[in-house]
Amino acid sequence: MASDSESFDLSILGLSAGDGKRLELEAELGEFEFAGEPYRPQPQPCPVVVNVTRMNGDGWALKLAFATTMRGTCMRCLGPAEREITVEVREVDQADGGEELDSPYISGSLLSLDRWAHDSLALALPTQVICRPQCLGLCPTCGIDLNADPGHEHEPGKDPRWSKLDELKFD
Image (cartoon, rainbow, N blue to C red):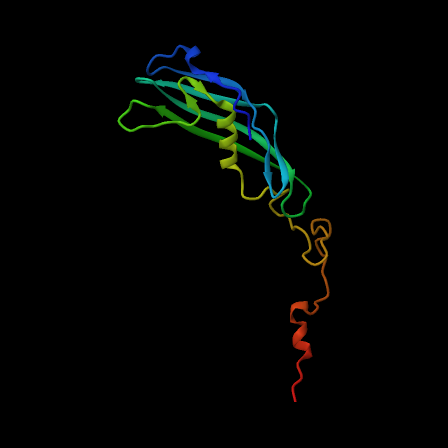
């Protein structure tokens, strides 16, 4: 998980209610793990754009946008995989409004940018990181990479789970 040690103090922007500012910053996205395999977003740190708007009272409206490339092991063929991911998310923190909108990434005027970027990327990740959409995976019988040998086939054989049926005698 991304470190929460880096915070950005929004109060240094000096924004009044209704004012906004576009910031170009960097965030550490951290590392992810699926099925015991590490997946690393690149580059690290990742350039991000944060649009900040000061709301009436003591609140903030934020938008975070960035693009990264996730690198790791293909979940089908176990070869190297890369997947480009674009993230665009919003957060609102308005404690004194009619409806309480409380962002877990803002404490007072401190924004936990690394944690927000990490969590947002986690929600944007695909269910499978694969080397290409047409990845054929591995042969379920012998484990050969079917991308390297797409015509690979086995002779149809008996399923060993049915072997006890061969012992039945019919008179």
